[in-house]
Image (cartoon, rainbow, N blue to C red; front, top):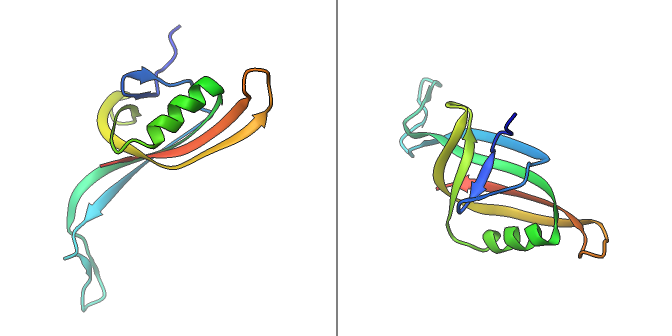
Amino acid sequence: MAFTEYLKINGELLPFPDFYDLTLSSVESDSGGETEAGTRQRDVVRQGVVDISVSFTVTAVWLKKMTFWSKQNKLTVQYFDTDTLSLKETEMYIDGFKAKLEQDTSYKGLWTVDFTLKEF
């Protein structure tokens, strides 16, 4: 039985996440809003913009890679798409990077890493 691949960054398969939360949102133009009659008018210019919040428990080797990626302006990301139930590729960046030491080991610790991938 093969395991599902959930996330790749720049072609590298990430470890299985402890937490994977995918959010799809819409981008609306400034012309939308509330009308004089009190109804809501939406002018959607883009749908299905992806934000993925993830958490991993990793060794120092993965911590170093993820810290490097968090400083990059643009990443090529393949994520598990809930529409097709397969990997879909897009360009994203990392926001809200957080690393927490969980356990000190002789191999530079066991870390919990949290961040959000945001689609351009």
